[in-house]
Amino acid sequence: MNKFFIAVAAITVVSFSSCKSKKEKVDENVENTQKQLEETVTDQIKKGQENVDKIDDFINDIPTFSSPEANEWIKKYGELAKEMKVAATTGDQDKLAELTKQAVDLSSELRKITQKLTPEDAKKLNDWTSKIQNELSK
Image 1 (tube, rainbow, N blue to C red):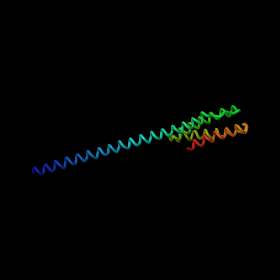
Image 2 (cartoon, rainbow, N blue to C red; image 1 turned 135 degrees about the horizontal axis):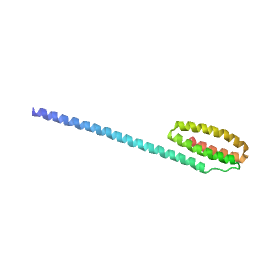
Image 3 (cartoon, rainbow, N blue to C red; image 1 turned 90 degrees about the vertical axis):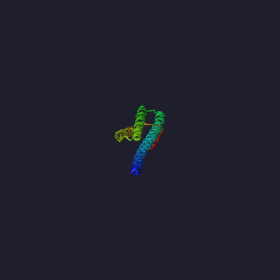
Image 4 (cartoon, rainbow, N blue to C red; image 1 turned 180 degrees about the horizontal axis):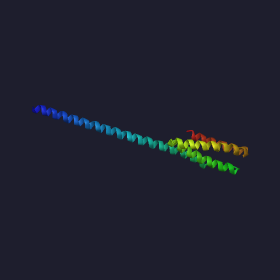
């Protein structure tokens, strides 16, 4: 009878310790998953900030034009581009849709403004907007 109780006690100890071991493994997996998620989010934030910084560089390097309308338009477009990049990076689809509508409006304004510019200014404006659009598509 003693041997039976010793065997039952041994089995009980083994089964409790294996349950604890499984719980520890689950906890460890959860911690690893949380750590990986945090690293991924941090990496995405850094990449997003790098993209915004690139847009900022282009915005801060705004060419000037003989037309005050063109100068005003380019500031609006630069700010819009920055907002679009932030919305795209963060995945804010509603904000991106709203900003895309604004971009369409600015595009129609651009056509009117470009007709009034000198050929040199028109080329300079076109080159700058192309750089911004290339950065936005990355």
